[in-house]
Length: 326
Image (cartoon, rainbow, N blue to C red; front, side, top):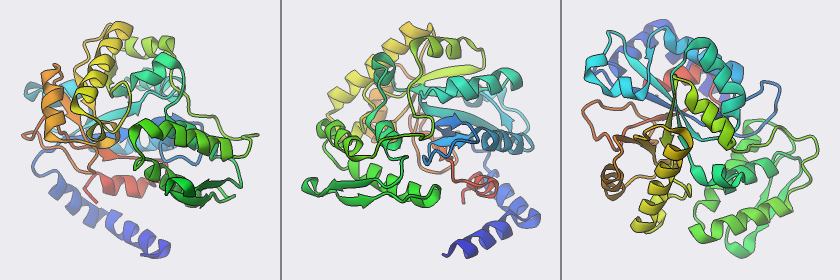
């Protein structure tokens, strides 16, 4: 579908009569709407990263949600006794980027907005971003040419322009790296960073929150903290005992750092298997979330709760259509 046809289709589906029908159908079974974000960035930053949502876009999305939904904590959403008359939405954020402290926390404080942050702990412990953020940071500059032919990953030319086309190339590189063996991925990411031009006046880089920032986030009564593993590996690509060690370590570290009882988990990249779900339950978690662009069934597996991924290139129309499963 061409961009023009796609825009026309979004407009038609978002029109009040059609959208009202779609929304009624989507909410008929009283599902739980769990949204997956990553971080927020300044409006003026030309950061070509799907994971970095502009502050103003996030605020518009929250306002749109509140017209129909009650935005609640995941604890409240999972408690049948706290069920309201309106549909419920839960806002979650993955990884633990510093934008959550700089940009999200002021919104939470001003609007009493409940959020749940799933934190991957190794980057907090070391202060160094994971491989995917290092690659996104490096490829914000113009004219990057990445040669990975000797690894079987091909050659890539990152456009000089900013926007969705540039992100499409960066996203392709990231997806290619996910096929690399987990113990080799960091080294390949380092090669990409080394081949990228100097950042110059590139946008604000993606970096993890500090321990102090995490503690301040956790101290807010509207901020819940969940675990996202220690290693942020795709857990179905590593041995189950290694996955268990990583998840258990993240839980223990977060409980020590925040003083919270860490009861909720998000699978890195959404990669889930029933064996992982059983392991998460055995470690004492009460829920775990995946990324399957669907609404969560209240009667489904609490260790495979569906989430809708929301990113930088979702217009408000596209956002509203995601809410009804389109």
